[in-house]
Amino acid sequence: MFNSVSFQEFRATLRGTIIEPIDQGYEDARKVYNGMISKRPLMIVRCADVADVIRSVNFARENNILLAVRSGGHNAGGLGICDDGLVIDLSLIRYTRVDPQAKTVVAGGGCIWGDIDHATHVFGMATPSGIISTTGVGGLTLGGGLGYLTRKYGLSIDNLLSVDMVLADGSFVTANANQNQDLFWAVRGGGGNFGIVTAFTFKLQQVDMLYGGPMLYEMSESEEVLKWYRKQITDVAPDDLSGFFAFLIVPPGPPFPDHLHLKKMCGIIWSYTGPLEKAEEIFKPIRAFKTPALDFVGPLPHPAMQSLFDGLLPPGLQWYWRADFVKELSDEAIEKHISFGKTMPTPLSTMHLYPINGAASRVANEDTAWSYRDSTWAMVIAGIDPDPANNEKISAWSKQYWEALHPYSAGGAYVNFMMDEGADRVKAAYRDNYDRLVTIKNKFDPNNLFRVNQNIKPTLKQ
Image (cartoon, rainbow, N blue to C red; front, side):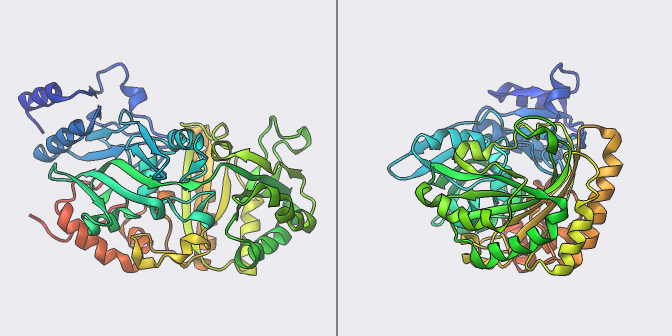
């Protein structure tokens, strides 16, 4: 594997720490967000800076050790960890720097989105991210970055200005519109296939207070709600208004009223980025459509919107995800959705439809690696439960749901919502962009050092 002298030299050169199976903190250090994933690496290197990342990449390459990279650890398939390999843990490279005049923020590779929201909100600004503030900036961005601001301001990658990266040969580069343009194209949706991003620079948008939150309806009304929602998102809603549809089971506690606890329902989680003084006017026809069983929509700060569900979904739950992009939501597909919505197997299991047809759709499929700009929604089906004894139940429901709806999909899925599903699914995720990604992979990582990911396999070997 590797000789003890080289390992001791490696350890001595680091400012960060190496955690091995014999160390007291190992069991906690190897955990990732998805409790269904349990892998045992040879070592976890908590890098203190870019120099540690470079030394770790060189050590893994020179000793032919399997390498995984972890930022926030939220990856659906647990691809920030590996068995019998070296994990580069970026969690100590966690800093932000806001330039309010330039309207930019620089974030270290170990940041979570809550770090960026905290740093930018005092300036009345934000950049598009996801819906859980504990998600890693690195993983979400490199996969694309869907969230509440997608219809108004695009994906996270549409607001990405530059990245600093450590490549497979240990070199350190910057990629942006003027430098390493092919690499910059690839990392905007191509995942961690091309190197380790140690810093991200995003442009900021004027986002301060939002008008948003959940509206829940009876499951018996779900067909009517889904058909109305379909028209709202495709034909009516301005870019300022976004809302994702969900099947859910109401959590048994505050702020939800007692009579709704553990009830299967459908809902729309709205987010309006326009002027607050116009919010009531915008939502007047929405509320006129049908009186919801619960209406928690109102003004709230952007960071509060981003963290609405953090408490419901702490690290360590068992997750099984399946996903697809969706262009059209047919009546037949709606019927099948409802049949599975009614059979959600556990209180946290859910299905979401995230709209992507606003600003994100005005970027061409070939302009970034993210290739489904022409879809209307990203669908994710998630079986979730705290108890590993229910893993088979939540996995079977998710798989059967996905198999029933996949024929109505656009063919591929958002890589951040995918488990480890094989090469064909990766190719389907990138469609016509896949061959170009392979060419760039051949250039920057021909020996596939960075392969614990939704892997784009190189075709060259050195």
